[in-house]
Length: 136
Image (cartoon, rainbow, N blue to C red):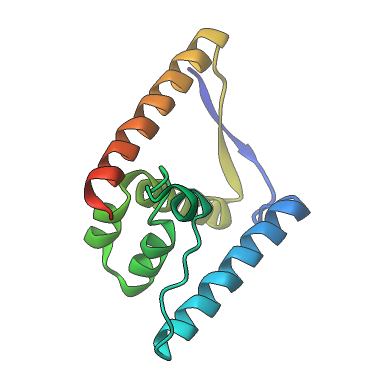
C-alpha cells in the first residue's frame, strides 16, 4: 500500500452538485438553529428517521457539526462516532492540503480495496448499532 504525496491545488474544487448539496444543507441547518432559538420546534432533517421512526447510520450529523462548533468534542463523538471521526479527519486533511499544497495518494490493489470496503461496511454497521442504542 504505497502512499505518495502529490502536488494539488491548495483549495479543492468540488463538483457543482456537491457544493449545491452541502450549501443547501448548511442553509437548512442554519435556518433550523435560528428558528429553534426563537422557540420553534426542532427541525427534523433526516427523512429516514421521519418515515421509519428509527435513526439512520448518519443520524446526529447536524448535532455533531453543532457540537464541533461549540468545541464539545466528546459530545460530538458520543452522538455519532463515525461522522465525528470522518469530519475531524476530513478537516485535518483539508488543513494539510491548504498548508502544503500536497495531498496523499494511496494506491491499493483490487484485493486491498475489497478489504477496505469490508472494513468500511463493518464500521458503518457498528456505528448504526451505536446510534440505534444511544439516540431516540
